[in-house]
Amino acid sequence: MDINVVNALTYEDFVKLFGNVVEKCPLIPAAIWSHLPFKDLADVEAHIREFIHSLPDSGKEGVLRCHPDLAGLDLQSGTLTRESQEEQSQAGMTTLDSAESLQMYTLNTEYKERFGFPFVICARLNSKADIVRQLSERLKNDRAAERERAVEEVTKICSLRLRNIFLSDIQTKL
Ligand SMILES: NC(=O)NC1=NC(=O)NC1=O
Image (cartoon, protein in one colour):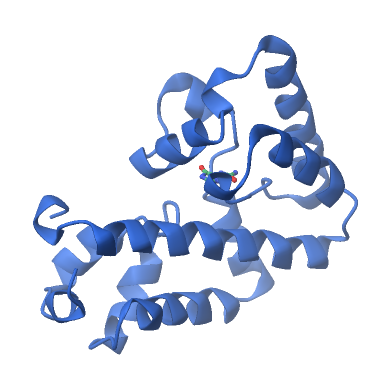
């Protein structure tokens, strides 16, 4: 997709197109719209990254809390967003056996109890085994380090979702 097409979008169409590049956080594209015109995809990504990194810790944790658990209730009840559904199924979260489901539930619960926000990882870049290993390892982090690590994963998820939009035809997205 041509960046000039993006720069010609109305505010409404801009947020319709980019509204879920950060899971359930349309505030973020709504905020970065002020920086129009963008030079290219990397410029859009840089402004999103800058917005998230400029948030206070409570704001960063709020962004993390907007993410559904991996293999959690939203997946089981079919209420994941389209992007999240695709990402979670790609990482094998939709084909866990009962032992694996219990393991994910137990680890996610322990993580949330420790940090007060959900475990977030870029599912597209990780296998089922990677996710379990990362979840177990990152549980040992302190809160500040883990918050930054999780935010880093949010920006990876965002980067892949942005690329997906830019590689697709804009008309099919509006
Ligand atoms: N808790 C999560 O990490 N959720 C997710 N990661 C993704 O890549 N997609 C999700 O829904």
